[in-house]
Length: 417
Image 1 (cartoon, rainbow, N blue to C red):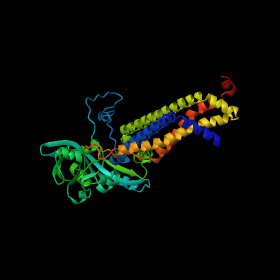
Image 2: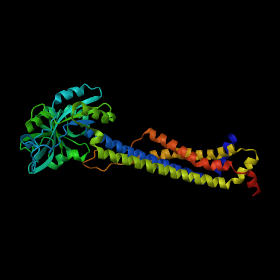
Image 3: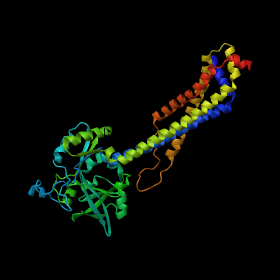
Image 4: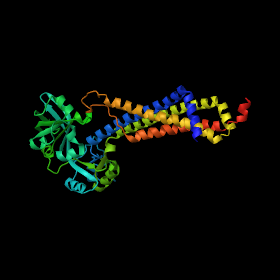
């Protein structure tokens, strides 16, 4: 075996430029794979963290469905003898609140899989500041419980969430919405509901989730104040947000809660279905491009090994004439191929790490929607181990067929010319 390895080393060093080109093919393939998977995975994790912080793992709500199949006329006239036709029917007045919400919340808090529960009363409002009026969404919450679901403490741009508990009629406002209204912490804004009621609130802080659909329209106030604004009792809530100890179980637990309580229950993946599709597409694209790069590098090694064997047919014939077996010949050329793969993969990992670090160090363009300072890049050990393993396997397979062909060379036919 030592002799076989010495011969393989001699072949590799005899043409260093050819060996270097083959190694560089693997190096760039692995390096680009590491860069792409680190950046794409980092972006996907950032997006997923944003989605998880902006929406609860599970949301229970009363899914209002308008039913026009029945009319009050059906209760007055015998429908077997007459046909009732109603033009422009109006839906009956249905309240979107969750009945027995207090009982449901207590039951959820006793569930060992649940980390936090937050009752919410959401309503559409108009934010009024001087002549400016903006349509948006107001959420009445118990702010400490809501902060457990959304990580609101880390999202605050100005002020603190505790200010909502100490200042009467306080409001936490989306950072982009506050800029549109040109208000700052301490300013007064008027909130008006579609029903005509209004109330004045003092801005005690601003937050930024990095999601335009939230930062541009959403505000938080104490649950009791929204109940007062819409003229409802202290048991009136429209949603129940739930944070699980393991968010990966949200889909199956949401279905269980829907059956248990008789209300609609959406998990975070369903709520953010379009974003999850984009994550899936990026993952597929990353895998396809990465495998393509590594496959191209493998074909390069295959061509180089085939050319090497073709140029060394006489050497192979002499080795066989001296007593080397077909297995020895295969070992020699497989050793060359795997050596190229290992060296190329290791340098590729270093190149990929360097490029990923360079991208990570780049400052992210400042904007009002995404609150990050640099490009999201992750450095997971499993990506590097996979790149190393795939590089070695690819080069092994690329050198396998040429080495098998080399082992079948007939030395007599070669030496005769």
